[in-house]
Length: 104
Image (cartoon, rainbow, N blue to C red):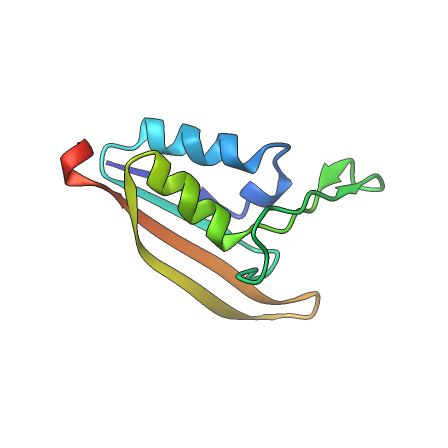
């Protein structure tokens, strides 16, 4: 019924592909949390490779995720900007979506 991605999406090479896989696996809900900020000011994801960590440290576009979810038959129930106490990051993103009943 529920697929969760907790703080991993911004480390992916193709964040849209991860969202599509989550949607394909979820019967009802998708929950994702991004811990590299809340980016409702960009239309597309921004990919950044950090060679020192051999990992991506991307910026997740809220509007892009919403578009991908919608194309997969999901409606966003909640998009939330969460304040953190982390010195390196002031905000996190929470996105919760539900499968559209007509596409169920």
